[in-house]
Image (cartoon, rainbow, N blue to C red; front, side, top):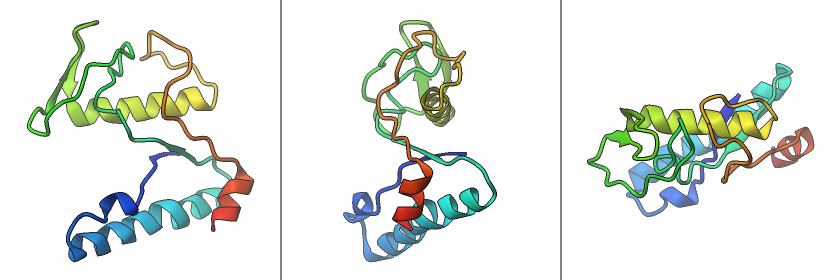
Length: 128
């Protein structure tokens, strides 16, 4: 199971109501979900969310910073076009697959991807 690393402190700039919601989601992602996945005998990996909208899921090229109003990912290197959120999700999937040693067919560049955080079982249990 792959999930993006969620930081509650990242959300602290928002209003109190937003903070309460974020801390609930952050608690679920950082504490409850890893435990449930571990209890079911599955592997859990947190992948850094930084730069996912700037990286092409098809070739791995960095496409540059986008404004929030720009909802379509366009890669000048390979010509890949798809919705921005879908492209970001694929980048997260590629980072996770690469971290566990699986071949990432969508990433033509191969090699190591930046922003991957690998946790072992000891780290997960210690964080609970």
